[in-house]
Structure formats: C-alpha cells, structure tokens
Image (cartoon, rainbow, N blue to C red; front, side, top):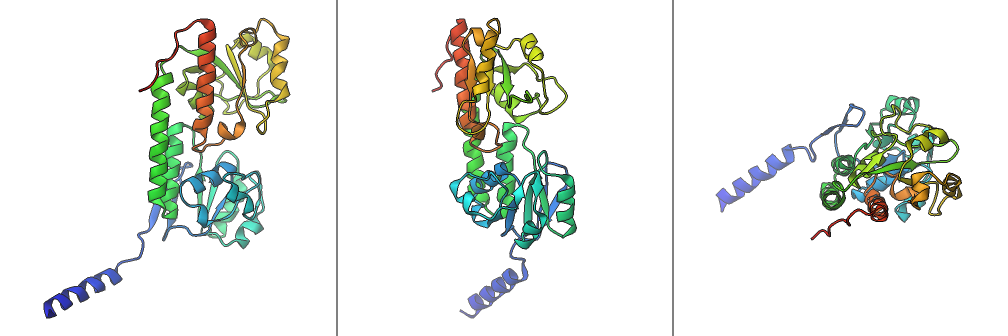
Length: 303
C-alpha cells in the first residue's frame, strides 16, 4: 500500500512539473513562423473564408471578431465586426484582446498586419492556392486552436470527397473554360488561383491560365480570340448575373453556340473553404454537360 502511494505521489509530481500545453510553432502561408505558448482562445478573423474555416475546424467558440461578409455559418453573423478585409479597424481588433489574428495574404493590407504585430498580437496568414491547401488549412487551424480532433476529421472528409471527384472527372476530355469573376472590369483567374485547381479537377482547361496575374483583367476581344467552349460566371449572391447573357451577342462564340453559359454562386466557389467542393461538383457537372453536347461518351459512374 505504501509503495503504491509513493508511486502515485511521484506520478502526480511529474505531471505537475510538465507544462499544461506544449508551445505551438507553425509556419504560415507567407513563410512566417508563428508561435503560441498555448492554443488560442480569442481569435479574430480578417476574411470571410477564414471565418468559415475556423468554424469548420471546430474553433468557432474561440472566434471573438470577424470582418464584413462573414455570413457563414449563420452563427458568425452575430459576432462583432472589425471593418472589412481591405479596411480593418485596428482599434476594434485590439479592443477584443485577441491572442491570435488569422489574416488573408491576398486581401489584407500588410501595413495593417504589421501594426497588429507591433501590438504583440500573433498574426497567422492563410492563403490556400489549391484544394489540398484547404484541407491543410483546416489542420493548421486545429493546431492553433487546440481543436485537432474536429479539424483533422473535417480535413479527412474533405480529402475523401476531393478524391472521389478527381477519380470521376480529372481525366475526362478537356473542356476549354473561361471563368468570369466580374463584368466591369472583366476579370478572370490564372492557373495559380484556387479556382483554376477546381477547373483542373473537373477536366477543364483554363483559357487564361498562363497570364502572370492571379486575378487578371482581360478584354472582350481576348475572350473572343480564346473562344472557350464554356463560360462560367460568379457575380454576387445566389442570383445568376444578367451580364452573363451578354455573350449571346456573339453567335460564333463556341460557349454561346453550344448553350454553355453557366453560373455558380460565388460563396461556394470563390471562398477557400470546405464548401468549395459544392461548387466543384456543380462545375464538374456543367463541364460534363459540355462533353455530352459535343458527343463525348458520358463519365463512368463511381462505385
């Protein structure tokens, strides 16, 4: 009995001598190493897609502030807002006393992030450029917030769904595709963009993939010269944009001649979150419609 008590006492002493949590060191998407002594308990999100990633990774209860348009999941709409992703209210962020800010490399201003760091607030930068990066982002957030179990399960589910789409569509005959972000200016994406990875997943070929800018502006003449077989538009909200039908002015444009002017709501294709696979599913089905219309054999069913 005495020997058991001594052993128990030694175990308790050893446990008390250890830190409650090991420090967390992670390299973000800008190449910076971010260190947290303990998992973050008060997180501010500086982009709508980051807000969604935080909730998907199980860190929703730790989110204390978000930027405008953080509207998914619905619980996010009740959180305090700290401006927009291009114009962050730094005083509002500081007032929330965050122990972590998760920022968007392409959307947030470097000067804002530098000022937050100067206040001693850890800033972790997120910038998914591929579908694999979405799953990795979930895992990273899980580490930062101490919600690894939820985050890793979400990442595993995402990868399985991604793999199923790839099995069915990636090797299908190519469809030359123009993805239209907006009308004025006429904007698209190059092959470094996450949306281009979705196009590749579906067996599409981005007609402006080789341009040097991530989200380049192009002219109508360039689109007509590229002569895509499919035009996929986003716009804003859930309504099909009226400007998509402007391509009907050119009867010889292959996308118009084939009836292949498609719409996908931007929230499920332009946000770097698990819901992007909802948009990917729609895009894959749309490009498969193009193939059927031009006489290709249908895609085999996945068992």
